[in-house]
Amino acid sequence: MLRLTRAPNIAIAALWADALQQGGFSASVQRYFLGGLAGELPPDQCLPEVWLTHAHEEQDARELLHHLQNMPQRRWLCACGETVEGGFEACWQCGRPMAA
Image (cartoon, rainbow, N blue to C red; front, side, top):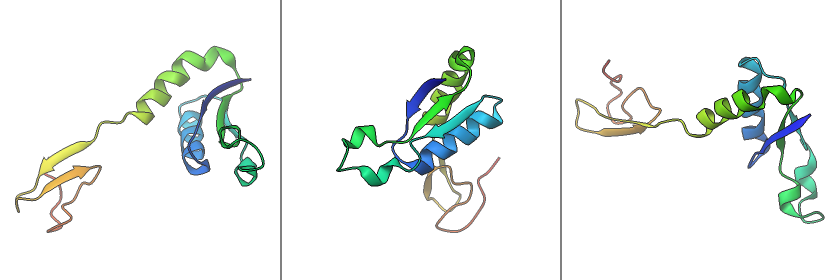
């Protein structure tokens, strides 16, 4: 087994592991319940980790993980004049969908 990365919280770790599994990698989350011991143990030792079962998958898994961690954010101007940022596909001001 090979530790791929540490995650800031269990939700992010689970999302990353799930995305890796959907990509065909043998990923799992370790230290799932260790967050409750932060304070008794050093906090950086309590972070959840994403692990791979097969070390030969490391390079491709790291590429996918890098893509997940650095997804580009959209920025578009709605017809109402509002600038919409992030992954939103509808304007928060008027509700119009993003133009194709």
